[in-house]
Length: 172
Image (spheres, rainbow, N blue to C red):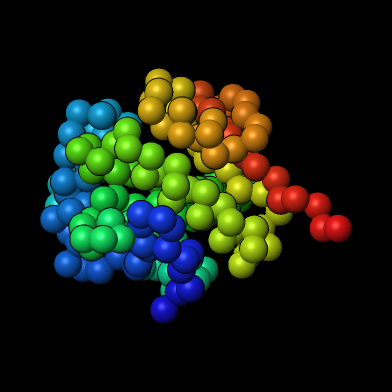
């Protein structure tokens, strides 16, 4: 069992369960999500997403956590921390995904702030980033609210991405 970020005003975090498959399929089953995650087009791929998250919990003690509405326990999407390759480094990334009907309500910004606090307070991370496709305007808006710095970079395959990041506050 991993430790989790504490609940926020409207949300709680939990580890992914095998029973979340239907929700994960739905999370990637709209035109916006498919545009940026075309590989997530089958139940098998979505099952792999859950298994990857569970491996991250086991190997690192954190990963992408399911986020739920605090009052109803309804699955909204996921938000959490994973390691991602960026320019030859292995960076701690804050990632997030929501069911289409829950986008635009501030859930990801709320969950993302809780995950940033968790990364700095519990993991003593020196920096947390988010990598975003430059045409993903909603995700770019969230990342710009969560992080203090940004720049472009090239992935190994030559595709341009935006790198948003926040450095830990210096110890006083």
